[in-house]
Amino acid sequence: MAEHTSSTITIEAAPADVMGVIADFARYPEWTGEVKEAEVLATDDRGRAEQVRLVLDAGAIKDDHTLAYTWIGDY
Image (cartoon, rainbow, N blue to C red; front, side):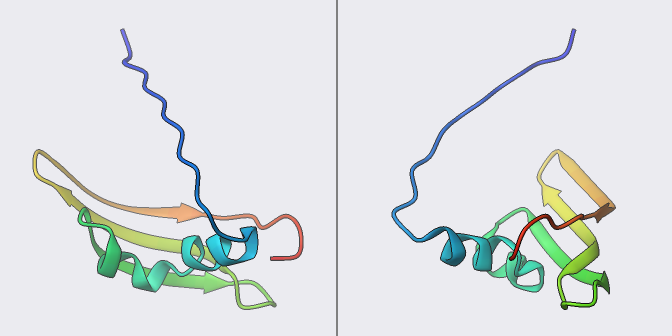
């Protein structure tokens, strides 16, 4: 049986400011303890990441994966 979890956080910042941090994949290793490497492999015509390789090390969980992103809206 799969485990499920959820949580909520309130961030006192403008949505564009939050999105600016979330979308800055190259800086993930600076502020997330588990992300050891982050590399943008492909961008769209606006310079937004479309493929990102992440290397994770969270102790017992280690992973190297590539994620695909589709941007909706103006960001």
